[in-house]
Amino acid sequence: MQSTTLSFANMHNHGELFANILRARRESFIVKNNWDLPETLGMEYDQYDTPVSRWLAVHDDTGRVLAGVRLTPTTARCGIYSYMIRDAQNGLLDSIPADLLYDSAPVLSTTWEATRGFVVHDIPAGMRQRVRLQLVMQMLSTSREEGITKLLALLPSNWGRWAARCKLDMAPAGRNMNMGGIDYQAVWIDFSSQLH
Image 1 (cartoon, rainbow, N blue to C red):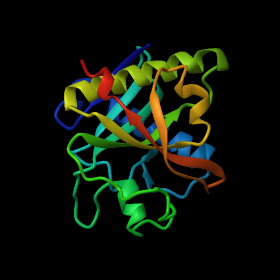
Image 2: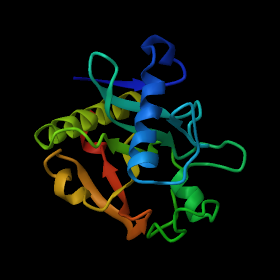
Image 3: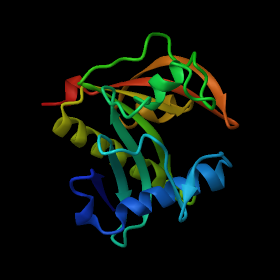
Image 4: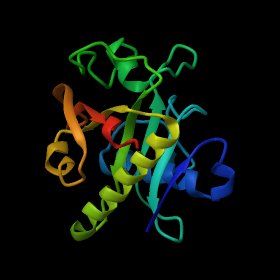
């Protein structure tokens, strides 16, 4: 098992890995969760998959993606869009409630957003924690490289059950809400003490 952070600058070095991330996202969000999201060629994508984002993947030697997440700077701009959580708060997205955060969505160079996080559904229970931990370690490594001190993440509301096991400093950033039959919550992930 290995992990990789992809960007538009390096994805050409990793063969099909980017496409495999989008295929795994389709499997997780469209097939398993039955969400109505854009898809083509067996891949899920949206307006936030732009050159400013980074895509983190835990994968095996064959390129099969086991888990992933997308990181986007909160300073991102592309047409009318910025980043998913802020755009939801500003009423640009029908699928996410506008009152998802307790405070205004930040626009700071050291704060990024984490969305489209997943662990593929057929990972055995005994291996899920190891995969999740590998993804967290890749998030930490990427945070060091990018100068990220905080992430604003949209996660399933059960985040508290595994955050401590992954040694993450997490706190609620908004209320619990049901989206597509799954309870979600915006949370802060603070990496500031781990960036040495």
